[in-house]
Each structure stands twice: as C-alpha cells, then as structure tokens.
Image (cartoon, rainbow, N blue to C red; front, side, top):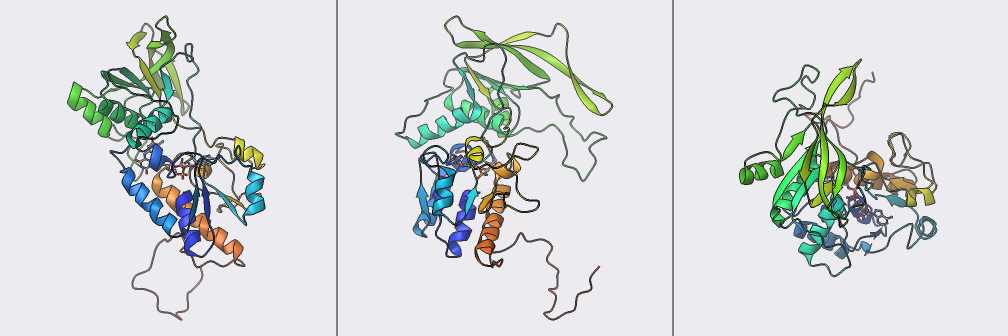
Length: 351
Ligand SMILES: Cc1cc2nc3c(=O)[nH]c(=O)nc-3n(C[C@H](O)[C@H](O)[C@H](O)COP(=O)(O)OP(=O)(O)OC[C@H]3O[C@@H](n4cnc5c(N)ncnc54)[C@H](O)[C@@H]3O)c2cc1C
C-alpha cells in the first residue's frame, strides 16, 4: 500500500520518502507471501524502478522508535501510514513459553531472509526434519505448510478450530455470496500428494503445549470440538473423551491478525475503529488528525494485495488534492463506465 501511494505521488511531482523498519521494502510481498507464490525478483524490480524514478527509500528505520511520528510531521507536508495489520493473535494456553513455538510471520520472514542470504541478525528457523503443527487453517497457515514442506519437514499437521465446510453450499449461503465450501489450497494438495491426506484437522482445539523436560515443545494436547447454533449464535462445545496428543517440535501460530501494532498510532494520538484498525473519516483515507492519512491493512485489517494497492493509490489522490486546493488529476477508483461513451455536452438527468 505504501509503495502504491508513493508511486502515485511521485508521478505527480511530490518528493516522496518511504520509511521501512525491515531491511528490505515490500512489506508482506517481500517477507510474508512465500517465493513460490510471488517471486522476490518481481518485487525488487518494482522497488528498483521506483528508486530510479526518484522515490527515496529509508530501510531499517522504525518510525515511532528510531524517529518519532512528530519528526515526520515536522519534516513532511503529509504522512500516510501503511504499516499493515501485523499484530498476530496469540494462543495463551499452558506451555506457551516453551521453545519451538513461533508466530507464522516469524517463521515465514526467517525463511525468506535465509533465501535472500540476508546478513542481518534474525532468528534462523527451519522445519527440516521436524514434526510441524500449524495452528490455524487459513491462508497464512497454508503458506506455513507449503514452506515447511519445502524445507523438508518430517510431517505436517494443521489444526482448524472450525468444522469442515460442506462440499456444496449450505442453505444459509446462497448465490451470489462467496461459497463457503471445502477447498484445498496449494499447501494442502502438496501434503496430500506426499503423505496421502489433507494435513488439516477440522473441529479441534489446543489445550496445552507439552514440555519435553528441557523447555522445548514436544506436542499439543488437543480436544475435538463441535459447533451448534443457538438463536443464530455459534456455540463451541468440547466433545467428551476426545482428548488426543499430537507430537510436534515446531509449532506455528497462524490464527489471524488483530490489527496494526499500536506504538506509532498511540504516539500520533490516532484513534482506533471498532475493529482495532486506524480510524479514518468515513469514506476517506484522512485520519482525524490533520495531514495524517492511513491506507492498506492498517486501515481495513488483514486483506489482499489488490485492496492494499487500491487504498494506497486512492490515499495518494486525496493527499495530492489536499496539497493542491482540493484538486487532483490522479485516477479515481473507477466504477461502471457507460458504453457507448456519453458524448461530451450531453445533459444528464438527475434522479
Ligand atoms: C502469510 C501471508 C500471505 C498472504 N498471501 C496473500 C496472497 O497470496 N494474495 C493476496 O492478495 N494477499 C495475501 N496476503 C495479504 C497481503 O499480503 C496484505 O493484504 C498486503 O500485503 C497489505 O499491504 P500493506 O502495505 O497494507 O501492509 P504490509 O504488506 O504488511 O506492509 C506494511 C509495512 O510497514 C512496515 N512497518 C510497520 N510498522 C512500521 C513502522 N513503525 N516504521 C516503519 N515501517 C513499519 C512493515 O515492516 C511492512 O513492511 C497475505 C498475507 C499474509 C500474512
């Protein structure tokens, strides 16, 4: 989102600086989405082009720690926050402090940095010869599965607390809603090809991380759960006598994200919306604080690359307009374009 915003503003002749706390720019495109889904050469090529076009990149600068938000406001006419929704959901059950339990992003970032042969100090994690449990059966979990497989894991299991979706739409999920049906993503198919079955176990909850006696995780004590509906509200119940231990020496927590981290937003005295994202004025990218804008995952929650790009571009348009007496020639969000095109000068009826 930050790159899209910078690119648009640079095209309009503004001087743009991108601050990035990591050693390389690109956000999740660089250190989240694994290489087999998105080549890092593609990301780097785009960043190099933008640098040649005049955008200044300052890496390893953590805004809010190395420099303050107020420093930015002093030195720049506008500040756009595109810090992502990087606060991961934790699993605070007994044994959480054991070695071998990591957030998905720590693992994926470490994997990518090893592929880059980064010299920086970072945790060198690998799934090689490990029994891996991925907690969370979503897209991030799938990327952990695909990465663990490529690193040579001994076996891979993935826990999903929700029940297995049906093979066809439920009565409460009619067209044109997105079909909530059972699907296999690439990681699930790859594991099935290698070991014969989908690595996901549905309707399972983690009760405790087990200690090997030396402070390392050796497994998870789990229980099966069932979901019932009461007045439209889903209720989870443990299935009696269904406890089971799954062995693991690497556990990856991929249970979603809770919004942006708060140290910078608090420093800038920004408010959160109901979903813990950065609050912007309705239908805009302007925060309630003058000259500060927000776009991408930090504004809408963990989402998709297309949305991040779109938000960055539209935030740039607002910034450009605010710096130019309310006018910007940057493209808007698009929409339905009438065909054949309406002739210039045609009178349009309102209503
Ligand atoms: C594992 C994973 C896989 C995904 N796969 C896909 C996919 O296949 N397709 C898809 O469309 N979407 C995917 N997504 C979602 C997509 O990557 C995000 O929606 C998108 O990257 C959000 O872009 P963003 O710019 O808002 O935030 P991010 O990409 O998170 O970028 C935020 C950047 O801000 C930096 N930053 C944060 N705080 C500071 C600070 N204080 N100072 C300086 N820098 C800071 C971060 O280091 C980061 O580089 C995936 C997400 C994850 C987690």
